[in-house]
Length: 310
Image (tube, rainbow, N blue to C red; front, side, top):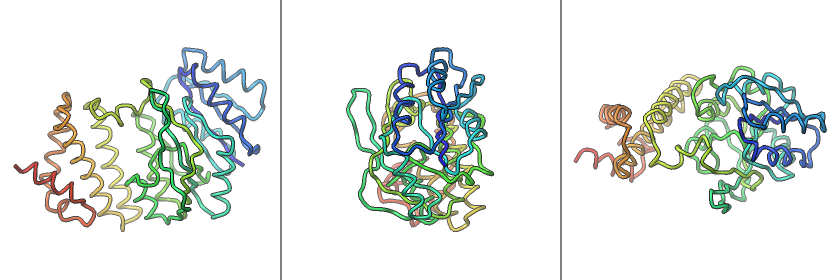
């Protein structure tokens, strides 16, 4: 019924914990597809050892590729009616799958979402999207909430997707940030999203995380900014086509990201971002009035606009 997909690359110190957290699930009707993304350590060997003990585990070994192409390999092999993802340095509570499955089935939802926790580099556990209420969101509301990141974000772990959402949607075969390139398309093609912020998933933050630069803004670099800007432009174009009512919101979200990054670059004295900085300043200047007067623009963003003009 559920296909759990995990991509692993050189995470021999973490991967056993991730695998065992899925094997301990109280929901048993699943297959576990582990894609070894060209590991040069023992990650692939460890996965094979678990597969030899449990026939629900299927390991696919492949040459090194980006995260998106690895997840696509897992999707191509998946047979479940629902798709769940786990990262190889994370772990899940034993009722992670049953919680999401019940949330999806009981509410006839195409996407089900749980809350999560994050273990930082000091081993401390921090709450992430924890709340009590059950939220049922239609297509447009779920896209907006995902972009606003109030109750959930674009990360694919913590979510259970109906398999048919992936019939015409795949992760990008290039670039580093696969979730922000893909998840909004899944939400834009879903009917109902059910979210309940009960913590069932644990993220781990360490120096090897792909998302470290995205959360530590003093580490911003030109490549990351350029990729984000490209993805957000593609997101605006896509949402304007498939859900025209979201056009103004999508445009605002693109400019909101730009002014946020400009503010951080200036405040933190980030270097090495000259080209994207010039681009963002140009876009903000060209679209100044539309951004400033948007119903979505917040007061602090208007203050940042004024500061740029002084």
